[in-house]
Amino acid sequence: MKITEITIRHLQMKLKAPFTTSFGTFTNKDFLLLEAKDEDGTVGWGESVAFHAPWYNEETLKTNWHMLEDFLIPLILNKEISHPDEVNEIFEPIRKNNMAKSTIEGAVWDIYAQQTNQSLASALGGTKDKIEVGISIGIQKSIDDLVALVDEYVKEGYKRIKVKIKPGWDIEVMRTLREKFPDVAIMADANSAYRLEDAELLKQLDEFNLTMVEQPLASDDIIDHAILQKQMTTPICLDESIHSLEDARKAVELGATKIINIKIGRVGGLTEAKKIHDYCESKGIPVWCGGMLESGIGRAHNVALTTLSNFILPGDTASSNRYWEKDIIEPEVVAENGYIHVPQTAGIGYKVNVETIESYTVDKKTYK
Ligand SMILES: O=C(O)CCC(=O)C1=CC=C[C@@H](O)[C@@H]1C(=O)O
Ligand SMILES: [Mg+2]
Image 1 (cartoon, rainbow, N blue to C red):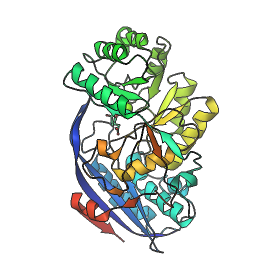
Image 2: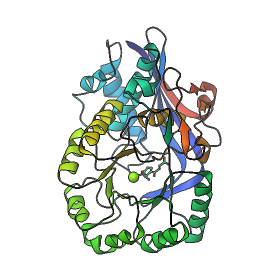
Image 3: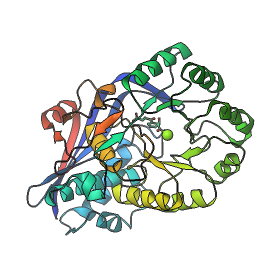
């Protein structure tokens, strides 16, 4: 494979409903899409999950565009590539900037799967033809509003309900949810809103038989999560703290986590995500695929990754229509009774609607 042309687009898509977490509220999603063209004309797509502001990690839409234009695209253009695993090696000289790297790597995987005439799921070694999915609900204006939303999603059949917590919106919220929904798989995501000094409060979560509490402490921490896990029965799941296989190994060996949320962009791409998956499987640590409010391109990559055997917990890949009036792929991603059927056609398995993409595009640039 030799990529001879890359186009970056800045898309602006309006979320159907604002999404609030402990660090902020999203009403629009501004993100980058990358279209890579091989010398034989095959086109692959990647999505940057960096937000417009550095709330989730240090990367943003603008830092991603800068890294792609000034460093990563020059390294990859007209380079002979025989397998997508080589992209990480090509990007070795560039420190961190995982979401920027993942944006190109995802497009390379898409081209590779098409050129080897297999689905992306199959190219990754996936074995499932359908995947279980859950849904992530942002912080609501009231507990009653949250209960109504949870009730709606449980009726739709989602296999797990993820709710955001933060100081002042935690114990009472989780107690109410558990009382209303005694048999539903419920988890909490704190997005680093707490400190080790809050251990006594966090331990109260143990009353509610949660499947996990995600990233309660600092986004760059492993050791304090290990100290906290010893004090809690609820499994800690790490998200923001895990950027690589090495981070995963350290966290598991220190007992900082019993579950890992794998996000393709956060770890630098599908190759590293697969390595983390394989390592966790060897250690009996279940993983699931987290979401970043992706459009259909990112959702398609998440669906493919989730077909790997150790993705045994429902992830965040809910239906497109939960987020978007009109997604940029056809068919859209649809969860039916909490399952998504995995497309078997070559590549990401969904038709990319370039006309719809152009309708959301506010800026674009092509590199040859
Ligand atoms: O895409 C989805 O539906 C998951 C959204 C979600 O829960 C998150 C997206 C981005 C950052 C956080 O707010 C949170 C997470 O940490 O998983
Ligand atoms: Mg999270």
